Image (tube, rainbow, N blue to C red; front, side, top):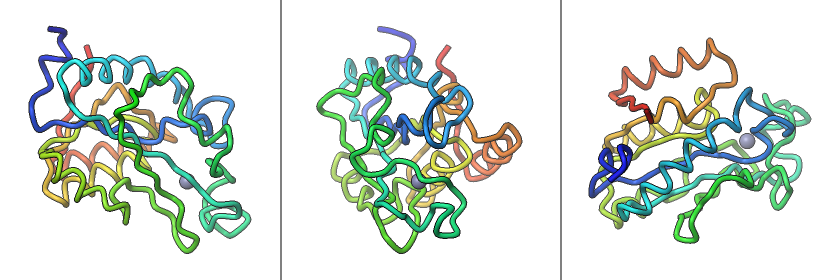
Length: 191
Ligand SMILES: [Zn+2]
């Protein structure tokens, strides 16, 4: 059994947040080294598949002219437009067909940074008997942070895969880690 497989147990789920082209170098809202999380997450995906641990993958999936875009007074340039290349998962991300896709950011009236925000995922996680979420993806200080904090609020154990996430900025990443630590998120590393 690989080291990663040994870290996984019954009741775990892998939660991969927004590993989409627009958040990687060359995309509409690129995060520095965002694509570097892909090979690391692939190792976790392989281990999860080997251990029968379910995989959830969230995606930002905005309508044209979304309220979170600059043109509407929001904080972000247009990104992850529904059905666009930018909204696709990174082409090297090896998601199995069994991965559960969690779509967010579709509301016209507000943004949804967290994979828990009005997606109904809690019902699904409870149905699947999930107790602990291992979280990685993009961006550490925005959607990963919001997802991890909501998961804690809902009573799940949360382990952030610290080398499988990247922040919008180093400083915000540090703040995000502190917030996560304060809420009881554990940190694991791949190696
Ligand atoms: Zn967005």
